[in-house]
Amino acid sequence: MNGFPDGFLWGTATAAHQVEGANTSCDLWLMEWMPDSLFAEPSGDACDHYHLYPQDIAMLKGLGFNTYRFSIEWARIEPEEGFFSAAALDHYRRMIACCLANDVKPMVTFHHFTAPLWFTKDGGWEDAKSVDRFARYAERAAKALGDLFAYACTINEANIPVMVTLMREAVGIAGSGERERVLAEAARLCGGERGRFAPYLSGDGHKATPHLIAAHRKGYEAIKASGTKAPVGVTLALNDFQPGPGGEALHEMADKIINRQFLEAAKGDDYVGVQTYTRVIFADNRVLPPADGTERTQMGYEFYPEALEATVRQAAKVSGCPVIVTENGIGTEDDARRIEYTRRALEGVRRALKDGVDVRGYIHWSMLDNFEWLEGYRPKFGLVEVDRATQARKPKPSAWWLGEIARRNALT
Image (cartoon, rainbow, N blue to C red; front, side, top):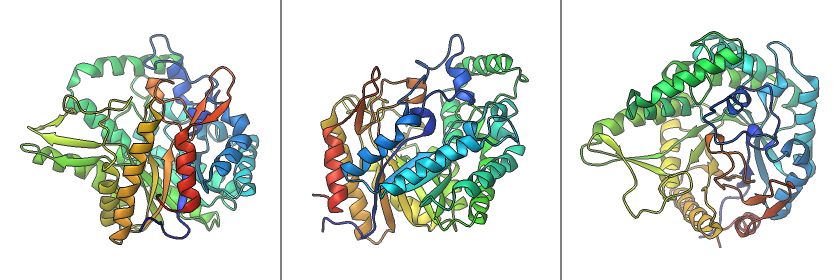
């Protein structure tokens, strides 16, 4: 059987900061433009998706997809604490309406890594006030938009701060001095207090975790209270954690802290979003690097599309929720390898479906070649090439290939 269930979601994804451009009120804009920035380059105009979204959504539909996952930008909607921009909310309402006009289901993410500068300046997710701050924002945005969107996601990869923190701890304190210096300088530049500036990807994930879990729960309720009929969930960064000889204890610890506690917190949600790119092998009480000669992506990940099947199965088993693959893809200049990676990942999804796992969609990362955080514009995750000088879009062979699978609802 090559087919997928009726109503299966086939889509692509973006994040506001990575594609919109000129996101000047957010925390990372400051960090990108700092002297001696850790970012390879600033996001700048990105892909100008803020203005070009009508053509991008029409292109997505023309390729054959039925779903578009994107984020609304908290820093645009609440650029100063307590001030909610009607203009920004109207923009996102037009964007969601554009999806509907093209018969594309809008899946709206409320927080995708970036936050308003005022929020991060005052402790970010490490401060308990973050829970009510996020819930207030979610309530206002859902009241303005919730009657239109088809799916909602509270927080993108709510487990990644603790994942990044554990990775940082695993390599020892040698790399922490530079991080502390950058955060202290960022605090100084924005007039903040030293030790309070806490970005999502660079802060203390241990401190942030309980607040992120609580914020998801309170945000879920706030979105539901808007009257939306849309399913609401959270997305998680799930690597396929595999134990090897001598790595059993480390594997158990990482799986519990990074994967299972968040999957357990998602119990009762309408769905859980799975975002997977590779596997991690634990052996000899350490994380093993990919073996010599192993194919790697532009991000340095092992080329291992079979990871997705494992994480889909784990997510369904632990959370008890329906699963939507909300991100899966590969950073590569070789589009043929993107097709091979995606084909094998989808074969894994199909095997899980055959075994009765409730998987309801596959959303590829990413629609566009875009700003890949610290790495800048070098990694190419997009199904669509973007000319950085002209902003012209050009679908790659992988876009047409995956779009045809979406049209047929079958892996041909």
